[in-house]
Length: 258
Ligand SMILES: Nc1ncnc2c1ncn2[C@@H]1O[C@H](COP(=O)(O)OP(=O)(O)OP(=O)(O)O)[C@@H](O)[C@H]1O
Ligand SMILES: [Mg+2]
Image (cartoon, rainbow, N blue to C red; front, side):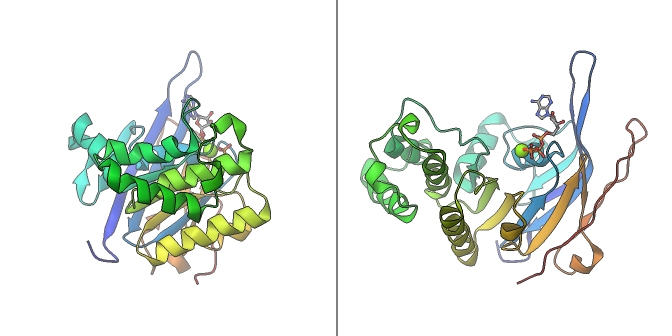
């Protein structure tokens, strides 16, 4: 697929979490299109729906309604096995809370996506080594996640997300637990990956880092907005509010395009 073709197309997507007595409308009629090679930053207040949106984009959760196509394929038409295959082959995910496997070493955690993909052991070794060097964690390869600081765990999570050379990298607060030096190096790494053609969709509270992205959208109370002067870059429109939910305020803000 070439640049400027949508890798992600989301139309009128909503996500409702039903609960006892309280139903949370996490995403409301979201429209978003992400092109191949894009670097999108999603900003917004806590509880605005950022992680929910990223989980749906990353095929970890399903929308309650609306359309979602990835590389031209409507996700609702895919079987569980096909979804797993796309997720393993195409998508790298950096989770807000790392999600490292506690009884596996750093090396094993990073190697796991390659095992899922069926990469042979001899080929896995140099890939894991290279990526751990990249995030400066090779010397901790034999440690368990509990033996690491939050920042170190974050870097392992980054290594695990990128080891399989995903075409789409989803990052939920990738610098949330890092000091500015390590935060900067993770952001440099993401910028490098994007220059190499990886499409990136990142959630961040940190406005310094949001500006690394080519596009910034705001997600507030489940609604997405991007200012019109960014419209030449891609098509994102704020959703309309359905009758069953209370209208929320939509904040529009943009970052400078590099
Ligand atoms: N599994 C779930 N069950 C019920 N409600 C949920 C679930 N996951 C998220 N929510 C609700 O959906 C809304 C959006 O949550 P989400 O985690 O997407 O927000 P966020 O923008 O990522 O926030 P933060 O910046 O704090 O990480 C919140 O009101 C949250 O309580
Ligand atoms: Mg979140």
